[in-house]
Amino acid sequence: MQEHILVIDDMLTNLKIVESFLKPYYKVSLVKSGEQALKFMEKNRPDLILLDIQMPGMDGFETIQRLKENPDDRNIPVLFLTSQEDIDSRMRGFQLGATDFILKPFMPEMVLKVIAARLKKKEEKV
Image (tube, rainbow, N blue to C red; front, side, top):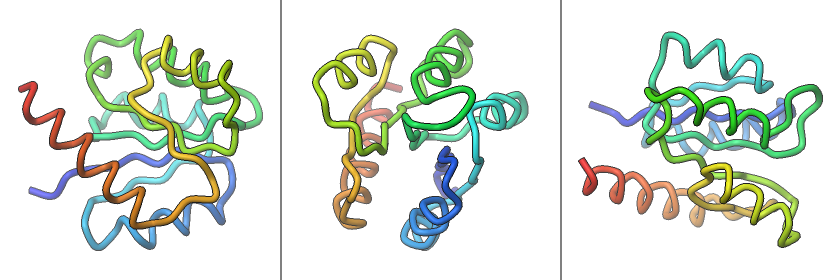
């Protein structure tokens, strides 16, 4: 069975770019906001989440906090895909339960390697 990746980003261009290089390897779902992500998670359990920090309304920090409050979602790896590289953002993200940070602009090959490593670690914990 193909592993499932949820991508959360308010920019349609970013969603389509990420989808284009993930789709050959994974089942991919795309949502444009934290609110949409929470609704999506009511009925779906992806294997990994790629999450942008800077979004209007509910930002990535609030989104991950809300996701991690649900025991069913707590162990899903969340990777921040962001242009924010300051130490405060990273510390806050890790404190809220982020697994890793991938900085924009990114290389698709790097994102694929990080995802594969995180999914492998998740399997080893099961």
